Image (cartoon, rainbow, N blue to C red; front, side):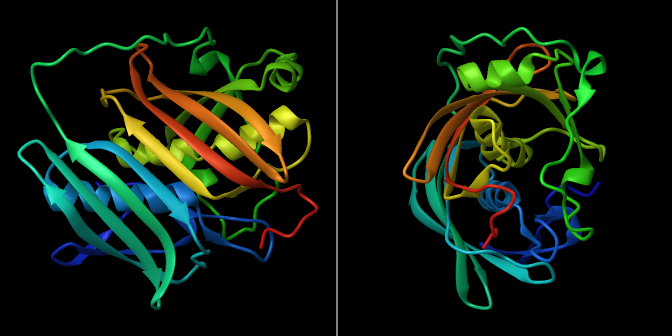
Length: 268
């Protein structure tokens, strides 16, 4: 079964991510690797390298990886302990840095298992409506086509998002396969669009970073992404997300800062 973000091991602690249409987004003539797919690839490389589950990872996005290129993922160990591994991943194209990732991995049994923020009220996915793709994508930018994204049918949801900054989406992959930390990283990169929606203007923005903190991953077909746009000023926006399984389990939290854009602006 092919993962939504397919990476190839080329050496110990070294992997390759082909930048194909299925992991790309972008408007006409400007197709590039989706930031969440880059973080997801780095997470897969980390978990494959060390055999431990992700605790947290944060990506700093430096440049774009264009369609047809290959991102080289170099994994480095900062510290490896009995229960926690701290490591970094650098993603490069032809020697140029595209993103840097810092992370910690590990599992420790015998400690409390609890969360304090319950899943918000939201109609089930079958009662929701498809969330349209905005802005229109280049025909070769097909990442969104591999996802099923649904929003509440409530006609007041846009007005509520502009008032409170909060919105919810159900997301799943159309390709069969289990939800894992790498997949959650992709879903977490829907924060920019929610910030744009909360501002009541077209567009979202280019991600400066993407932070994912994993509580635990449980079997689920759909993930409820509860997004809170926090603030915008000086041409930048900030927001966070909670990611829930269908049974209400809080699986992860995420946060991002973005360069604000409108549809009329260049994405470069």
